[in-house]
Image (tube, rainbow, N blue to C red; front, side, top):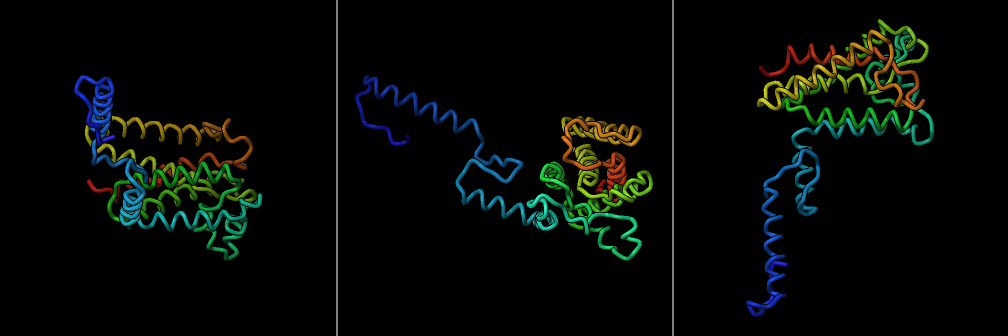
Length: 247
């Protein structure tokens, strides 16, 4: 409480009230007033939170489009199914269903598949510091193209099983985010290199072995994962970052 009671100086209640005020003051000053957490949340009131959310959407308005696409293409998941007509199928594309090239990343097989891929994609896209919306979208397209091409060339099984999901693009965005960190201070530089080595190493391992590094976590809810798709997304992201990232 900020309004202290008027009591005698030697009163124990006054002493405790004073100590409580000091504790409050210390706790308040321990957190800077201008602290901006890296997520849409805050320590202040709802109005401040709403302003931060709107500021974020003004900075990256396309993320609202991505959320909408993810929701639309995964409505069947609510009923235990998936939108097979929007998955990538080589034969269907050759027969003129070209839209599958664009829609397949947003389709997911189960709620667990959607949760993993959707959360990773949105959080990693949000972490990209590139200011140009065109460059950010180019990153997504490049990672998606790399993931699709690698899967199409190296995994004949997609001719029957198909391909869907955002994990390939998410891996590409992780590599791009790591490269962006290399231009920061010494701490960010170290984290960037560690992240880049880990994500590239993961992609190489999966491409060589044909197995997911964390396959024990799929619980049979991820269909038949295409391991090489992650390496393709990483490669596409690295190529895009090389040509498009600001030096």
